[in-house]
Amino acid sequence: MERSLVLVKPEAFARGLTGEVLRRIEAKGYRLVALSILTPPRELLGRHYAEHEGKPFFESLMAFMSSGPVTAIVIEGEQCIAGFRSLAGATDPTKAAPGSIRGDLGRDWGQGSTQNVVHGSDSPESAAREIGLWFPELSG
Image (cartoon, rainbow, N blue to C red):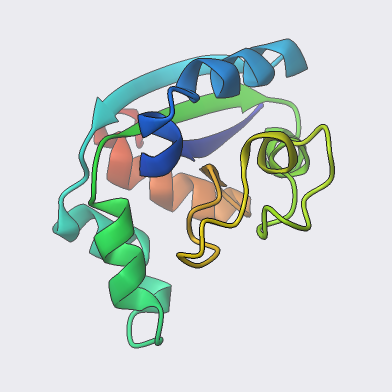
């Protein structure tokens, strides 16, 4: 059984889309293991996005992701990492297919592609690292 971290990003939280994202996750058949609503501190975001430090978009990403509440979720299910990434759709919400979370709920706000509704872990290794950061009580 696989686990993944899903984040409903600040713009989606502000638009009241957490329930719709959760509905789609549960409709897909994945189990919710943990859920937390928080405005992430820069220290947590710095560790989460450590691989992007030094890149031109890093500071704007940090500012955006700390700009308001996010919903952090741990989901569980067979192949849920790949399954959720397919459900989420392409990173660029303009190019994301209709029927996907980003395709249906996202759009280009003229602020860069970081405002794309959700984040999902991209590998079992990333999922373990990210879950450990956001939900240390689940790491083990």
